[in-house]
Length: 487
Ligand SMILES: Cc1cc2nc3c(=O)[nH]c(=O)nc-3n(C[C@H](O)[C@H](O)[C@H](O)COP(=O)(O)OP(=O)(O)OC[C@H]3O[C@@H](n4cnc5c(N)ncnc54)[C@H](O)[C@@H]3O)c2cc1C
Image (cartoon, rainbow, N blue to C red; front, side, top):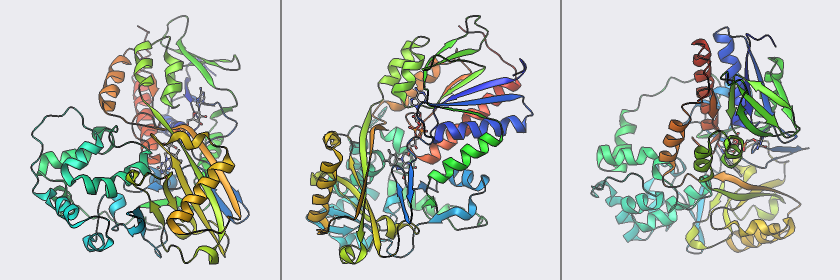
């Protein structure tokens, strides 16, 4: 590599790392920067939490199964990569989601998953909330806003305060658990749903604020191609996005290294503003810029020598473990049980199951005709004990749950378990303040960046947005040619 060529090393080959590499190459092209990019992945496989297993007519997502379209970055990246014709929305038929509470499955109002309930009548008729609970929830419009100046507040505290304990327990908590696998009394409202606090502050009520925002929202011009549903995925699974990204990066000359992780990042011995990246296999890479997209507890180890304070802050971000259990059933054996996308289980019900998705009713092309694919979700904050079981026992436990909740007694024809140990970062109270301190402490290291799901957003769109933001920052830094000298 000529000495005038910038070398960017990206650690971690999940969506955060691969998207960052893609945008780094885009920026290089846009600004005509001579740049070489290397991505280092410890595993033999690319994609991190994105893992699609395809066999014959069955398509199983071990990790995420879709992305939110209201955050546009994942949809936009798919389109840029030429995957427009592969995008699929959720089925329009059977578009119902249920919550298991008070011993029965009760339908959630449509739009609640996006925190925008459209049909209040379904909420009233569902029996999810008592009349007292409904009245308290409706009173949110006139409930006084908090006069306290919280620096941060838990999700549980915020939603109980605004909507009452019942609405929190049976409507909001299970949705939050489905996204973060977390304990709402630990998670920070600032770091997870800051918009709700803003609405309270601005309009005195979340409901009033959302109504006003909806009434004044500009209708976006329809983009060409398929109309997005709230969640979208790819016909051949999200693993296809990873395959296309890897192929695109290979075509653009990005060096893709698998099978050896990064151990440490240090300034070069000459302290010329560059970094030395040590790999587990003893290889050393010299880089003008490094982007760490690994889980924060891994990132902490890599930078402990140069920035122990930041390493300690990163260590304070907890992670929880979850598992997905995919099972197929003959459709006729379970058809009578549920006609919908699945159900969530409030923590209050004290069950092993967090949620179950009737995958083949939710998405097309997931299983062959006559078979229904169901995916169960277990674990999460305070419920990790199930991860200690072997696969057979996890499947047994989930089957018992399905029998108790939905009455399915038929044995599955196929099962697949995916464990995500310390896979889900928890943005607990104080997360935003920690991020601000990290940013400040990293100032002396301008071309050493951190992103990844542990910091600025756990969803796939957030991870992609961060990749783009980091790439823009790097390009600006290179354009100013501000090769810093270390502190
Ligand atoms: C079960 C589950 C379901 C989910 N569902 C959804 C969903 O439906 N929609 C959605 O938007 N999000 C979902 N998420 C969240 C989303 O999938 C993740 O937040 C996102 O994929 C994380 O991407 P990442 O690249 O930041 O991290 P990861 O995917 O964790 O990638 C980090 C990579 O770094 C590698 N690595 C670790 N240490 C080292 C090292 N020392 N050196 C080199 N490499 C290293 C790892 O092997 C890994 O490949 C889900 C997550 C889980 C676990």
